[in-house]
Image (tube, one colour):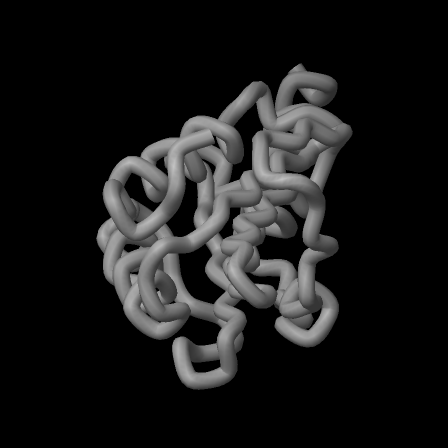
Length: 143
């Protein structure tokens, strides 16, 4: 019985840490590397790069509105005026934070999502970013 209680306490402690660990916005609000247009998968991350066909502010405003409409997502740094915005999205059950930075570099929109804890996000960042990109429609060039 003691082992079960200890296990429950450890799990609750881990959940509390994941949910309440402070976020260092400066660590996550970094300009993502631009690459060739396309989708780029990394360990625990996903980066989408698209050519934009509209003014940068219009594209970033559309992404910001879509991102903030995503459940459990909040802005942690940046602005449309800065040309770079970073969001934090938490998973429903455990509250694992993922950080997504959106920036316009020249005629490229770069959306870079990555996890904070662990090694695999099970495709969550890719799915979220794909949903955000759907919102842009004609504001970006097709691949």
